[in-house]
Length: 407
Image 1 (cartoon, helix red, strand yellow):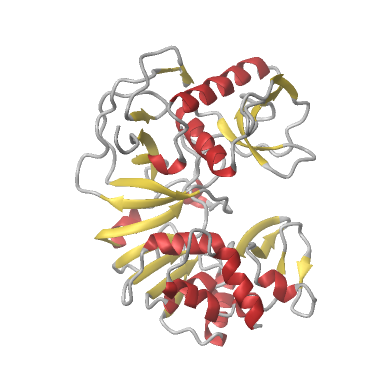
Image 2 (spheres, rainbow, N blue to C red):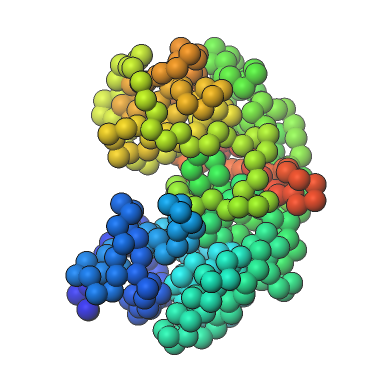
């Protein structure tokens, strides 16, 4: 078992784990939190008696623990993603942490092992009950599990940190009511069909600085033959702006991720929402050949994807039959056709709006390249209140590209 745990730590270290978090991963028994088995990504059910059970538990993979039909509704997240989010949370012993989405209870156990006092809430009573039981079996103290709607934030208490383990469309105002003024939220927020994890901070000022002159956007489509490339790039609600006030939050990107999406107000669609994921785009033809050698690596491709989604409201996530990878797509009005931008710059397209979507994909790629291929982490994000007035959310509406150091 010691060798299994050692390999587990090696798999999830990534850019490095703090000694305290490495100790938490090494000592908190993940198998206790999936004692009833789980489903793998390919849908196969794995039970504790199966030979692959422990090797899979101690792999860097998500373990799905509840399905509604064929749709995952609860899981133990990918450990390396947990690690990145917990490191970004910057927890110190004694801090009060609110977790939205209890899942199996494993993430709360890791936080408690760092000395945090954790309240974790889940809207599904059976999920909360299983998490509570697993925490007790693992001997983890310092975690309270509540059955509550994540949008409300559960008990009205104050917290130093808030972490969200489900993909959301925006930030609940109720969370801000519970967060200390110098606190932070780590939240996966929908953007272009994926859920980049954001490090969100409250701020007392008016928001992001005014945008400088740059490429204009008209009718949601970039005009690339515009003024010179700016040092700072801002876009609000799909249009370039010269000045705007955002809400009481600013954010930067921690990492790319894909999460199960929340229901209710936290998953509500609004005017800036990107199209739903297009599963299995068919009939794609190459309309533009490869032009980047070597092809973009995973981090660079995510950078292109994030920028494209900031600049255009029809950018989303698509899959292609016979290929495992997920792709950046510009979808047409039906959501069943459009253009896919590959990592080598080639563009595939289908449907009656194929030509227009391909032109947009090319324009977005060209703009990103002209701006020196900014990464996801180069952006600063502002928020606006959207959605149902009775249950609004703070959703990203302004993206500012910060200039590289020395420019």
